[in-house]
Amino acid sequence: MPQLSDLIGSFVDDKICYDTGYQAPSQPATHTTQPIVTGSSVLGLKYKGGVILAADTLGSYGSLARFRDIRRITTVGKNILVGASGDYSDFQKIQELLEEVVAEDYCLDDGRTHTAKEIHSYLGRVLYGRRNKMDPLWNTLVIAGVENGNSFLGQVDLLGTQFEDDTLATGFGSHIARPLLRNAYNENLTEEEARKIVLDCMRVLFYRDARTIIKIQ
Amino acid sequence: SISMNTQGGFTFDLCKRNNFLQTKGVAPPKSKKTGTTICGVVFKDGVVLGADTRATEGPIVCDKNCEKIHYIAKNIYCCGAGTAADTENTTELISSQLELHRYATKRQPRVVTALTMLKQLLFRYQGYVSAALVLGGVDSTGPHLHTVYPHGSTDELPYVSMGSGSLAAMAVLEKDYKKDMTEEEAILIVRNAIRAGIFNDLGSGSNVDICVLKKDSTNMLRNYETPNPRVPRREAGYTFPRGYTEVLNEAKENFNRVEIQDAPVPMEI
Image (cartoon, rainbow over all chains, first blue to last red; front, side):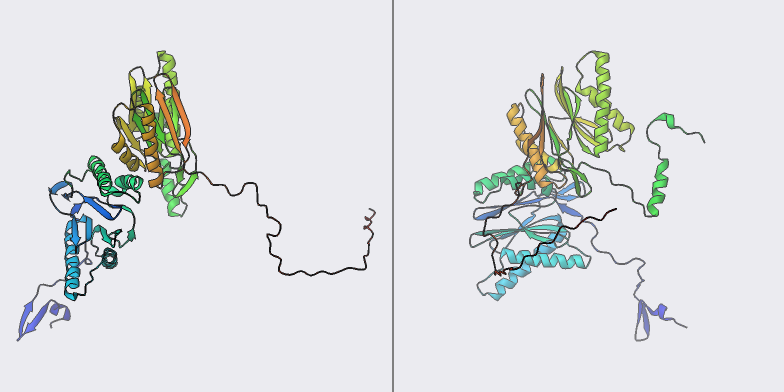
């Protein structure tokens, strides 16, 4: 006599029995447990009237320098930058989400677009929600922008930790570059000075981080 | 069974006992780590060593002003990171071995001698002696700066940093180091590197110690800088000027009758 367990994984259509090949899983479903193609550090520094971001253009496949010219900093709208370290495919997903946000702004057509602070908040909620579902987007994001002459610089990581600061660095840069950025920061930096500081930090990171290359964005 | 204690090195018999005790809920005592920033730099005439002064027991600061730059010989000093007992005792042991060696050779001790003694000791203990050292000194062959890792490997470099704050210190050293610096420049760069460790690493803190080693002189600058002073609250105590306390209301009562009682007479025993 056919048992219920025999019927699981099959369905009947006009008295013909199909077997879909479904088998009960022996282990629970798992999601992202490790990042695959990764980017190293992203640096951010506020200066008078603006913000500067820097990252190298390497996508590492473990210890292999696989993709030597990827862009880890993207623009959102006209005056917001989002940089990412961590898994590159998850960053591409985040870029799609940000494009949807920009498209929504365009369609609403009410003279107002999302500000950097709002994008920071949005990404923070997205990443936190994904972490709670135990399926994180494995990135640490740096969001930078300028509104009415005020510069904004914030960070969100794969756990959903959100904060703002005058200087930011993700990954290895948080140990190596952050002390240098903190020492050099003051409220009246010019763009030239900020650029020089950030380039110095990228140079030190190239010396001491094994997962970097000399080309930067 | 015959014990092989005469061989030296470690016997691990008590590990079984410790594991058993842990299953019964008896936790072993936490070792005092130095959680440190130490660094060294070679300049034109010698070597500058620097260290912070915080010693930690897990997340607690157990010594706010400990000495991490240890004496090995008059011309050789050693900064130590890792377990405080290990760094202290290892450097003292090598210091006395080196003194005996000096009597035998009748010469000023060389940095490479201390280096060889340290690395042979640490390798013999296979990394169980958790001492990461920055060894610097000036001898007849010139100024030398070495690092020694807990497993016994060594490096000779013009600038080095070790400890939990080593990345912060190394960032500053990488940025500002140049060959053939003067003594002032070298002290400044070491002081900046230790400050980067003190302010950006939670395992390091308090003050900056510096040691300058040159061909014919050694200058130990203990507490060269104290960027974290304890701001005293009024040490002389508080004085309250008259009228400081607000009087809410006043009540006066006159006593017309005053009775004086005789002092009580003690009981006769």
